[in-house]
Image (tube, rainbow, N blue to C red; front, side):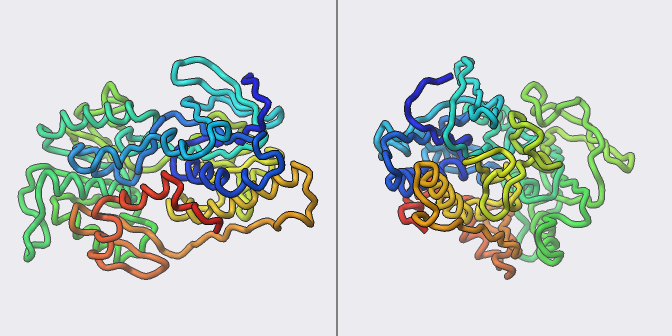
Length: 416
């Protein structure tokens, strides 16, 4: 057990939820606590770098797509602005949470085991994608090595099958289609004789199930313009060889994709993009929902069953659907409630602290999906967006223009 006289506020996860929470607490909670020097915010992350995860469908094609110094950001460097004694960074993976005795066991990047006791805990470990190309499932070196293998195989690929009709699958198809095939001319609705056959397979009746049918149909037309076709109402039953597209040893192997209607698709490259898995294997099942996410109070973001001062935010938590904008909406609520709990634990009376803040889920239709470098579909707050606006807001660089202020903490300069 790590021996430290300070009270550790441990944040598990170094992505949108974890980094934002740590900045918010360091700026707005710790300075207001009695004996503030006795507290330390500690981020535990498998990667020492944060990644603009939405950019993966384009970034996986080539390093030339994005400025790598903006795509990957050093987490420790972003926190050098705070007193050294108030912040710590640990590169490691959580392997067991003991919420009763209030400590978390981790395996350091070196392989050494360690346990950290916590006064408060924020679980923001996110979710992993089936394909190692589309997320920071481990550390940045693992992701980059996966991209290298994919890029080696790309020039000789003649057929690509993508399983999953959600944003990741559609964006990957759009990026690969335009990169490999180009785009049909102004007066052509489809690209004839594409160099590479790209097929998107979805079990749903339409692609992009979170968006209305008219928007989904528009997306399908844009995919056709880059030589990508869609097969709907069909599930992928099995893949041969097993692990193709997911395991590094067969990441770029030729694959036979068996569909549940008995038909098969042959693929030089297979990309599974059909969902995510919450990173909760280290958490007791009594704290989890059926889908693997942490059962989180939908108003306060506390994990009520786990005991005092334990919280969850982001894709790992059950309070809202996975979406970056909903994570960012939750940070001020989470920060305020953590500060309240810390003040009460420090001896303040209920009358001396603010009341709980309540998170309100925004269920309006909001999602933007670029399809190549010049097209896109989507909606914001229930209103359909023209292709140009989707390109302007997200399609230019997949939100990279927004992450500088977020990673540095400038976005959380004011207590909102």
